[in-house]
Length: 75
Image 1 (cartoon, rainbow, N blue to C red):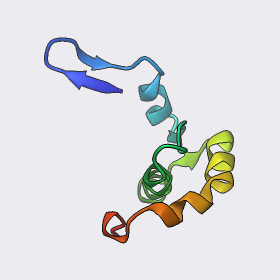
Image 2: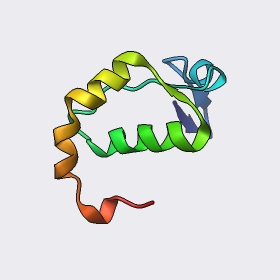
Image 3: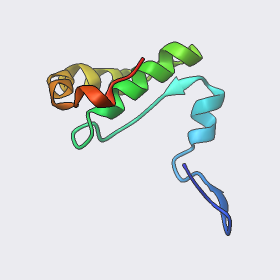
C-alpha cells in the first residue's frame, strides 16, 4: 500500500483485505532481510497470522538475518 495527497490510498495488492483478515503476506525478502523481522514483529504485536508461503520464505532466507546491522534491530 502507498499513500499520497493527490491519489489517497493506493492498494494494488489488497493490503486492506489482509489487514481485515489479520494476515501478514509479503514478498521480496531477498533484497531486505529486515522485512522478515518486521513481519514477525507485526504478527506478534498485532496478533496476526503469517501466510504460509511468507512463513516458508522467512525460514528459507533466515540466514540473511546475519546481514542486518545490529543498530537496525530494536525491541
